[in-house]
Image (cartoon, rainbow, N blue to C red; front, side, top):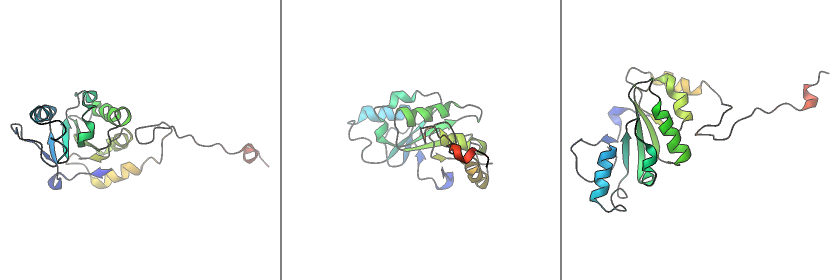
Length: 170
């Protein structure tokens, strides 16, 4: 898991009134992306520079299926730590739509959320300012494995039983 320091992040949110073509390391809203796509030739607009999307947690990510290869980053927002819709978006992007770029959690991201963020497909987080980086790194080491499949390891992980001879008392 990559931890993002907002002071040193190369990705910048596009200005609301920015009607220019996407530039390198620019995070666009869905409306800005659609406007840029409409102004340029579809093959030429994003190919020149890595661009990203900043999505609200109520956005239907399946509408982006055809455009996903054009994005280097998708940032999903958690407006409240109790609102888990971005987990579902991440799972859809990774498992169903096969998004291979960086998937970043932003907003009210707490240390306690990190194991589930990782399991649903996030590979980068921007922690809420009051959260500790040391605690976040510990949280990711808390569980050694899971029985259920997830976005990282889709197959279930079963513990192997010892051979019958090894289980019998001597």
